Amino acid sequence: MTSMTSQIFEPNGEGIQAAAAVLRRGGIVAFPTETVYGLGADAFNEEAVRRIYAVKGRPADNPSIVHIARASDIGLLTPAVAPDVVRLADAFWPGPLTMIVEKRPEVPGVTTGGLATVGVRLPDSDIARALIRAAGSPVAAPSANPSGRPSPTAAAHVLADFEGARPGAGLAPDAVLRGPDCRIGIESTVVDMTASPPAVLRPGYVTAYDLSNVLGVDVTDAREGGGEEGAAPKAPGMKYRHYAPEAEMLVIEGAREKVESEIGRLKTLNEGIGRRVGVMLFEEEAYMRAAHDFFARLRALDREGVDLILAGALPMADGLGFAVMNRMMKAAGYNIVKV
Ligand code: TXA
Ligand code: MG
Image (tube, rainbow, N blue to C red):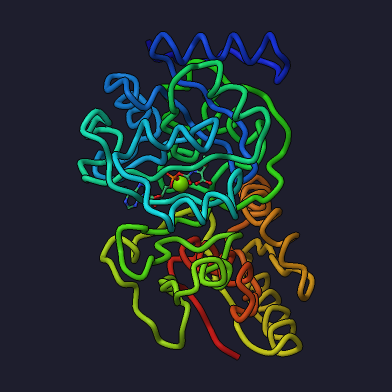
């Protein structure tokens, strides 16, 4: 089953049971988490996971994160839980941390993009955990956006992406569990626990510094996505556009006053030649707010129909600032000027 339009369920007991029933019969449910909305299916049902990839338009070799309802359920997915995995689970679960661990043979290859590992997360959202518990099986869920587009941080974003509003829209999730806006707003930190020392593959709210403090070793911080001066993306895939708005996007990096005046200058210049310009400039040091608003702002600017987005870079010395910058640089296709 895969539909053209989605049933909408409210996040109460009845709605959660109905959404879980959709998962149990192999359907796809978009649901809220504390990070972003996920597009979920039973992680052990190959056909169902394949349909997620069809609905998302996602390449089959990009693995999905598997979500569990209680920490001990990690044993359903991996044969051996290392002490460091237990330490991080104790410290950060439920929460925005995904751990990459060796997978059990029972976990289908379609779920893990053909890898021998699986990414596991226990979300800090009562609605998400209730849904997974009622489904009775771990839930594979990439972010609920069409591949390449900004992640959804509100139920309305999911509905806008899949309810025929999008040109060329076809498939939609079978159901959308209409929960609250996501508290954090950027996706979970992904840490590879099969590497020694563990390595952050995707930065997020939980920083490499936080992980290092718990483990007592220096967790590698990928620093990809424009982290350090002149750093090139590590994998070829990282140079492709991700989280891409419709508009062209340019990041301006430098001291605050210089950034503000350069944005003003570029705005005037571009408007002078008839282009519509949107500005994304977060308050200084308001990193939580920046993470919370980032994807929603991108979507709002697209809805306004701007041609060019001028975005002020966040300082990357802050862990959350770094995580937001990872998304901002990808959204802009690494289009940056320094002032
Ligand atoms: O916050 C989140 O993580 C959200 C919510 C729904 O939980 N999910 C999410 O999923 O962002 P997705 O599919 O959009 O991003 C998952 C990332 C991808 O970059 C994927 O390549 C990586 O995690 N990943 C998943 N499993 C992996 C594995 N076994 N090895 C390496 N990377 C993996
Ligand atoms: Mg995603």
